[in-house]
Amino acid sequence: MSNRIAVVPGSFDPPTLGHLDVIRRAAGLYDEVHVLVVHNPGKEAMLPIAQRVSLLEQSIREDGFPAEHVTVASWSVGLLVDYATEVGAGVLVKGIRSQVDVAYETPMAIVNRHLAGVETVFLLPDPSHALVSSSLVRQVASLGGDVSPYVPPVVSRFLDTGGRGI
Ligand code: PNS
Image (tube, rainbow, N blue to C red; front, side):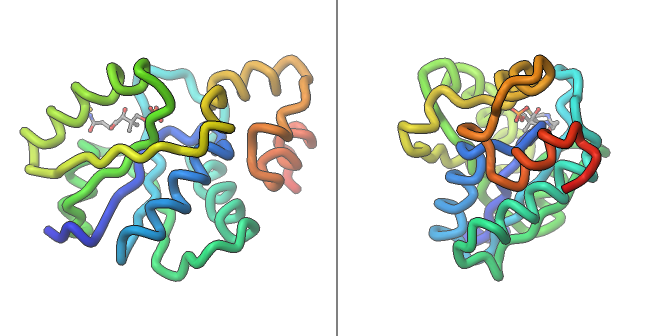
């Protein structure tokens, strides 16, 4: 298990500019970064997991930051820490926008450390992304609003076409 290998997990339904910011920062800190789309049983999904993986891959490519060491995968069986153990990652990276996120993430971080000794590192995205969340984007998109200020261009184009491709 290496502290140079990190997993950036999340629902990414859909990926937002805040997610991309955290992934970019993690890519600058770790030798190997696994962006992991995980099914969250507590949330009703908008996009299929394979679609989220594809949008993340395209968003990272389109953004253009150095990402040879960044891969995108999905995990729907078992615990998040099982994936981390499988790829030898000692670190989980999460973005923190506010105290609300700290309260939501803290129990998960403690449980993940108890389960497998995996540490969680919290990164602060740029404050311009502080109010952006996937659930807000889902709501605006479902009611026909413009989500382009909140999501990577490829995601905006995808949602604009009603999810029929880009
Ligand atoms: O983007 P989200 O929805 O806040 O991400 C939450 C997620 C998917 C990372 C979390 O629900 C999770 O880790 N799910 C995997 C199941 C698991 O390992 N649970 C035990 C530790 S919390």
